[in-house]
Each structure stands twice: as C-alpha cells, then as structure tokens.
Image (cartoon, rainbow, N blue to C red):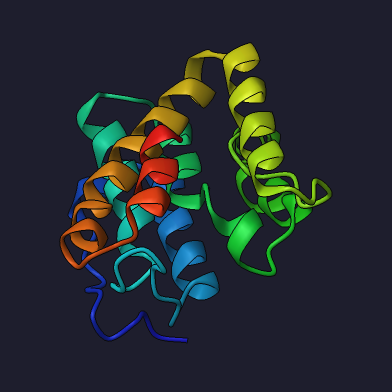
Length: 159
C-alpha cells in the first residue's frame, strides 16, 4: 500500500541507517491511512518526529528504528514476533518496553506501567520514551489552541 498521500516517501535523515529505513517501510505498511487523534495529521508524522529527534541526538540505527516503530504494537495489527523477525530481538524489546500493555484495562494504570518499565530499563528505552513525550507535547499545542477541555489537557500534560 502506498504511503498516506500527505506524507512524502523521502526520509533522507535515515539514508545512512539501514534498519531505520526498513522500519520506515514497515511503519508505512502498518500505519498507511491512520490519523493522529490529538491533532489530525497523518499518523506516520509522529513516529518520524520521534525518530528524527533521536537521529539528531546521534542515537544508533537500532534506537532510531525502534523510535519509528514505537507505536506499531499499540496501534496496528503488528506483533512483537513480527518486529523480532524483521528487526531483531533488541529492537522488538525496545519497542515493547515503550508500548502500553493491552492487558491492563485502566488507561492511567497502563500509562503508569509503561513509565515504570521505562524507568527500570533506562538507557535506550528512556531515550525513545522521552523523544515520544517531547513530540506529544508539541502536538498538544494545536488541540489546546482549538479549545481542548482544560481537564483533558491537564491529564495529557501531566503524562
């Protein structure tokens, strides 16, 4: 399936990162027409923002690849085994560390669980998690400007 029409296929910042380039193709296959709930643009722009932040911080290829893939377990039909087979156990583990556990029903408990797992893991998981949160904070500007309920905004900002 082609990429979302509003997302170009030129991801030059990963030209020298073969694993991240492959992750881009995988993400395009799995997020083709999804839109971000927070602010409405093509979903793929968020993982691109997260991964480009980590590339600018000179993170290694596998970390940038995990950043590209950080939402595929939560938001697509991709499985951890798919990631392991295509990108290796290390990338799959990193993506799993920063992903919500779907067996936890309560949203706040799911978010608490991810934060605690990332805190314990530290290192690369913390880098991906932090870049994700920075990106989400930037995305939140538009819904707040459009009148997002103050309580909902406060919850998102706290996270």
